[in-house]
Length: 321
Image 1 (cartoon, rainbow, N blue to C red):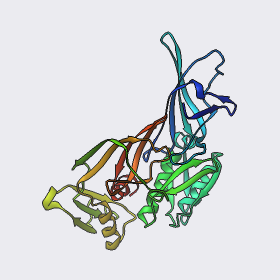
Image 2: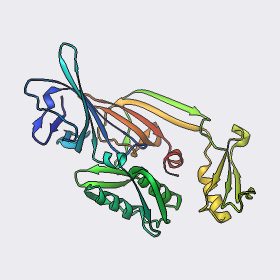
Image 3: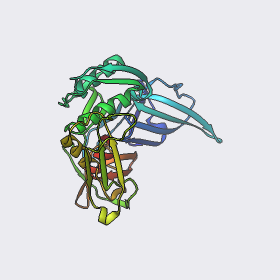
């Protein structure tokens, strides 16, 4: 195994690893690793809650770096079929934000950056470089929900108000915020084993009707905006947007424009592993610039990766708009 796996900051499990992968998606907050190892007599007792890290040589470099650090063992189970094996699932520590619930009142005028720092502080998660998202958010009463869903609400509102799309990641410096598609190194996907292109009208929207605040429970409000695109080509697939925050026709038109998205196109790629590609990164495939929505790295030498890719406008609508 060309990767290093260290448990509890002192036990090197690298020679025992038979299978090792890293995976994440834009729908989840925490980087996840699954590993399978051979159980030997001197193997330490491995328990959920303990730290674990994975290191390897990043693609295109020569020195080993941590790829997952710090991680936390979340689940483990043993299998004995004549030779005993242990399966371990571990996550970045952002998993605590995905698994913890709360409710709170968030005042108007805060940015997503300020709120993320507040969540992290209360959950004891160190903070690294949290870029300034810039957009001031509205007052929000967050009823019983996970901290992750609170963060996603704030990031969605940031996009809705004209800001960029962002993604949280855990680094050795602490919790950090990255702009989706803003990676400085954009990899051209080569050494491809398979590409699947999927085109569908499932999820497409060709007509949008926007309704503002309800005037009465006994009446139907007049729409503030109705917009169409490609109905002659794909037929009418209408979405109704009801949002009390939309009060003017200009706001309604902006919301409708963002929602219109016709034919849905995604790509699935299996290729030689580039072990630093993360969900939210921009990559190039046959001249197209696409966003990674899901990635699974099968680590090894040589490794391989499975990617799910979509255009930026689809990511904006599906995940953050």
